[in-house]
Image (spheres, helix red, strand yellow):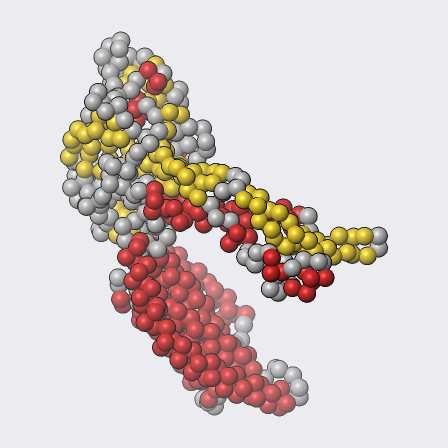
Length: 553
């Protein structure tokens, strides 16, 4: 703990003044005058480590205090504390957004969220915003200096004609940059990217900046991000050069595809590179060091799920996971549906064939949205976009094995489906042709709209159904597979009725009812899927490795 030299009271870092401030007498002093060092090892500093007994998350703070809730799993148990030596990061960005301002920005964000659970707008809940310093790695990237001959073509206006020139260009690269990656598995990489617009306005680390706040512990080594950083650096360099040459109306020429053009220009295609710009650049990660960056953290817990509100403590950028209260949403949707139904009944006369066509389109739209959300949920559950998580490698390997085993079956199924599509397309085309002949060359027949809509939704619906089943099969809740199947089968029933063309209208109304049921039930399930997307399973950080060995200068 930092003590006031005037009264002996507790000192904290005051965000508005960016000074150390005594909570009792109000005395202020620069943070640089306070620091904590380990007398045996200057590269470390003494701190209190608070461990959650429920999820294993670890927070550190130089202050001795009672921590009554966990910011990661939302449990309200008292966190156990112990004193340990922590590696000193090289740099830190102090908090510049106050807690009050953080709460105001959050209220502005959720002010128009009609279906948000009311407790997420409660003032007492907002008091749980906690300031946490997240460990990040600053990874240095360099492009080794080299000269590479590459062929380019340029088009320019010469007099009244356009002239095309092809020539060799000696391309040199000698640049460097730094990239940020979060060093804690507690913070999902998608969250880190959303709030990652930190500036370069850093200062040398002093433990005093932590007074009144907490810091997470690094447990992800920087070498885990090397491939990702190299790819980003390579893409950025290629985009910058491509943009410059596009501005000059110059274009990269692939020798294998443009050998004749190159030979006319007196250039031997065999003597130059055939790679793309992205393949040409090979960045190298030279060094890395650690820094602590400020984040405001708020956790909402509902049974075995949690959702996070995370704000950049320097710029105010915010990442929110906002669940929906299902009862409020259904009440609102029901009122809107009744109003639309009443208006359509008063002003429109809809044929049974048109009703079936419209409902099949609605079912297809719902299936498309459902498939998209299932894909997002799969990526979130399997941590496919979170390189720093311990589940990342296992999830990707599992997907590769499953995809490989399914490849042969999918290839055979693809040939069969392609043949079926061609047969159906030929049938529908002939049917439409006869419809047009029967209606005097027009397309006004009552079956035309149904035939076109049922054909389009039938073919595309099968594709979406297969995609939806594939995504849902990777989820923990296996019952999710039934919803794309239900939607897809209803669309196929509409298609079969359209092909059959029964005389009795009840077939069309019955098919429309099936499509509506198959639309409404998955639509209701979409709310659950959305809430799963807006929340996370309770985290578990037991067995975290490298927590006190990763932060090295």
